[in-house]
Amino acid sequence: MMVKIAIMGYGVVGSGVGEVLRVHIDSIARRAKEEIRIKYILDLRDFPDSPFADRFVKDFDIILNDPEVQIVAEVMGGLHPAFEYVKACLENGKSVVTSNKELVAAKGAELLAIAQKNNLNFLFEASVGGGIPIIRPISQCLAANDVIGIAGILNGTTNFILTKMIREQMTFEDALALAQKLGYAERNPAADIEGHDACRKICILASLAFGRHVYPGQVHTEGIENLTLADVDYAESWGGVIKLIGRVKMLESGKIQIICCPMFIDRESQLANVDDVFNGILVRGDATGDVVFYGKGAGKLPTASAVVADIIDCVKHIKARKYLFWEDGSPDYVEDYLEDVLPMYVRATAENASVALGTADALFGGVQQLSRKDAPRNELAFVTKEMKEKDIREKLEQLSRMGVKVETTVRVADL
Ligand code: HSE
Image 1 (tube, helix red, strand yellow):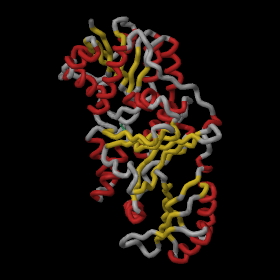
Image 2 (cartoon, protein in one colour; image 1 turned 120 degrees about the vertical axis):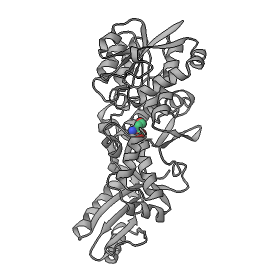
Image 3 (cartoon, helix red, strand yellow; image 1 turned 180 degrees about the vertical axis):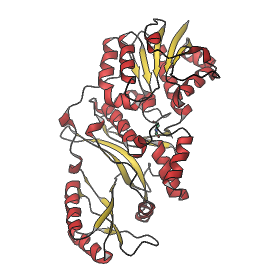
Image 4 (cartoon, helix red, strand yellow; image 1 turned 90 degrees about the horizontal axis):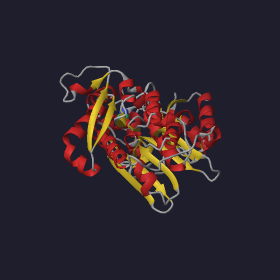
């Protein structure tokens, strides 16, 4: 028997999917118990030198209207036309696997419902953590737990850049160029740098773990674009590192607290040593305690590995559905991030830094002063006590009115 599939998009991930399927053709056939044959590859470009040169099509309808195609891998990225294509495939009897986090984060509940209605599968293991198994572990292996919270380094590009800045004093621009060359970054790397990619991924994990869709627009998101080597040095003197973190926790009220932003992470944390393109995801279950997933979070073959595993799973469940589902979201499900209680790192400048530090100390009821080598005379840096972010922001406003210029703030994580 043979199962015919189509790949939509022949970029970094799409070409990786082709390569993995071609190189591992025999072992995959053994595991899937069927031979998997790529019938079409959809891309607007020509690839005359590809081993699949005869399979390329430019018209989506060829795939949609071919009843032989049972599974479609969407690896085009972007919301449109990926959403319309995936929806049409699911409505036309084809299971879909995707690596597209933007699509799943925006439309997951809707597409899962369509898949369920049509008794098909919509799988997206590659959408979070690249090659790291995380969707199945949360939906299957940890199913006996109530998940209390999840925190993760979810973007390979920014982790790569931060690592290069911390370890090699490489400039932001050079590190980004290298990440792009290695195929880690999004087509528009602003999605990486500004935190949107990590935000989409924590939305997917939150939706999966708690059963209700969280939309990226509901999540306060900050990127790494305002961080400097000074902040990296202060983090070190505090006893940790700065990482871009996506974090969600379930509150007693039944709402969730969710955020995506750079955070100070204690050197002892399991996430502190997740470097380069690696991702690390900590899932806190009520029965398991902390479980940490670690591996390459971006790149051609790691991501392709997860896509192909989903294809194999679809082949094995061609007439059955794998249980994977969450409900639509609601506007009041997400708690205001300003209500969260945590300490805050602050770097500021003032004409007289030591007077400003004294003022901050009085205002916050005590702060932990930080120092670094060769700091300019007008610079001060400190970490506040744990308090509601809303109150911290109010006190920083007061400091500003007294002539202290707040340059950077970074939340301090308890991970
Ligand atoms: N641009 C993403 C990253 C790719 O750097 O993590 C993987 O989703």
